Figure (cartoon, rainbow, N blue to C red):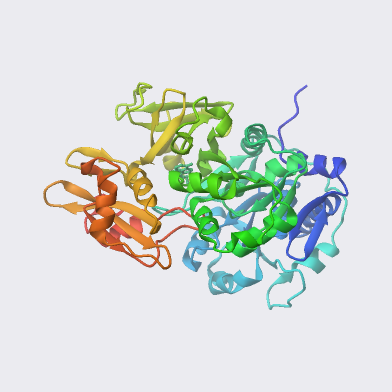
Length: 524
Ligand code: AMP
């Protein structure tokens, strides 16, 4: 007799095994697993009281918080579908997503109620507005979370018929390119992804995870489920602040964190590392964008922290490949190799050329990364045409380009749309960025293709200098020439104040390109 794989089981199990164990630290508030489960039950009952049932969409718009964590379980206990919103989007995007998803209830952090108020008249399906604050705020039109759940039952909600193919969330994609698409994830997708993280990241009951990635982003790369399943402690970080990160690692004895390269950069540049006494040796997972090799080396040598990398997409729940030091038999070039990863258990990856044929595993042939697995999503919400474009021949087509190395790693070369084609040669922008990051003055950089009369396009680097340093354009170009082939070197460099990024730290290269390309070919 088979039982369906439901993520609800994770919190139930942790509360049973570790009722008095610390489940969440969020500023002044701390909850044990029994308390976390009780709060999730109350939320489930309170939502039922509003008429929310199986398949109904409930959205949350909030930075990381204990409310966010409770929402994942409070909704799934009654079979509702959580729609986490990216808080960096503007009101018009929220309006589009809420209407597109047909959301009935919105759960909103106090800092974001004004954005929702702006669009409330145009939200056709929203019936109830909840403000997620620790103390009642009494805002007109809004229900305060705490009194609302205090009045609701703390008992498990009545059993409903829920299958592993039922949706648990619809995660709208981060929008580095066009309009967000709603990625439908099922209980099975998230369950299997949690298992994969537990196995490959060795998530255990004594782990204390710092939430540096936003929870709205594909369940914070799966941590909501994996860490809860094992009964680890969630330490919530609301906004990226290096001082706070170091303080929390020190005080809460953090053992594990998942972050984007931009956060890693903030950590490496933090000037007061020495004032913190850190007794744990945290494992840092970098996800969501290619981590520069120079950062990985510094993380290990300057801080002595372990590094792991995961690659994946919202559409794959998200983990597809994993890279850990012990995977590698040859450690010599680990920082460079760390950029690649072996397929996670249960993931079948093929790299295909333009004609759809698998490319050889020869270390040089580039192909689009395509995946087949239980973590691959159900499709895009109400967009069957987009789904059919993405899932073809039984594989999900990621739009990323990769190369197999001799050890069976997939090395992500670039996003298909970001590859620079200069004089017929394909140039990987992360390779150039990697070279630039080795220069001591380079704090952040992005390489894009810009129009060129002779070559069609040519690499241009936009560089943010580290505070108190300087470097000229010619010096940086010269520096690259010492490290990568001439044809790959940037032909121009612009020093800028900052780079546009998504909330998950991804560079929005299309925004950088806009200035240089007027035709449609390159703007996205
Ligand atoms: P999202 O769905 O917002 O997570 O975006 C997924 C995209 O992020 C992928 O298609 C990749 O282009 C990029 N990405 C994620 N992880 C990595 C990684 N470890 N290395 C390189 N690119 C990555």
